[in-house]
Image 1 (tube, rainbow, N blue to C red):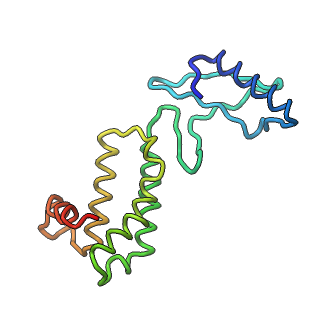
Image 2: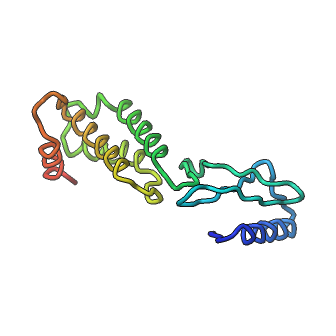
Image 3: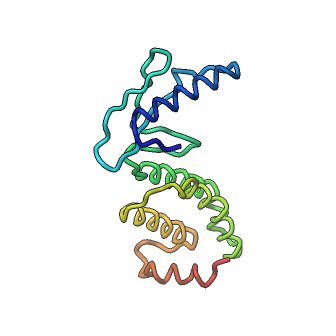
Length: 167
């Protein structure tokens, strides 16, 4: 739920507390945090519940995705790429082995890209984020086909191969 003012958030928190108590539940004040999303410079908000001010955080991990108050996703992308690289390396021998290209690509899609792109629908991408993802993609395809960085094979040629052999 989005709220456009600090007062609006305070009213929502009070309503949540009231309804929770009606059902015999209590909000855990130690686990409840406040984060304000903004395009500009983040500012301090003061939200109180049961005479305690809730902690304001600058980033928060939710469903294994890192959310930041300035809506940047560069840390999340770096984390996802590292996790996907680990997933690839675990299956590296298999993916670089003598199995069909079609099967290799299906395995990369299932084992690597599902990890790399988890939560990507919520990302706010900048040009450098897109370049980082594209560089990772090229690294995966080149490693899978044992194409050295020093080989004179352009990224376009590698992508053309991928396009012609896409599922």
